[in-house]
Image (cartoon, one colour):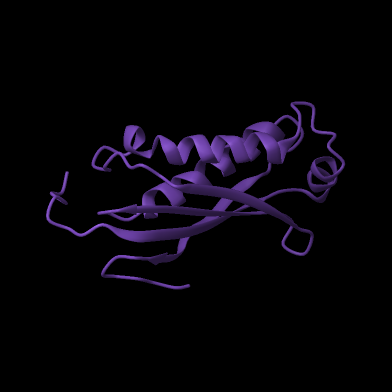
Length: 142
């Protein structure tokens, strides 16, 4: 791991996004809460939050962090035929939370996929990206 002992503690945030493309019928089932495994967004939100908290266990060189805030939210997009996933992670620390935000979106997307795979074999997880980060020396986006 990189030595961060000399870095100052600052407020840091990171936001990420991703997308799960699916059939319109699957979107309808999600919206109406008719997916056999249960409420897709509740399960995927918890999965994303839990994953962000365990990022250091999943990514070998990540520092274990004391996260102050994690949010995962979803937007159904009829036009794009799928579900957009957004995460935001915050802390006060010596290193950023980009990996935690990206992990939250990635695992939330995997949970959506798992919840819906029995009714839709054509889903595609795509466009997982860091949309912003603040608090370090290389801030991006807002």
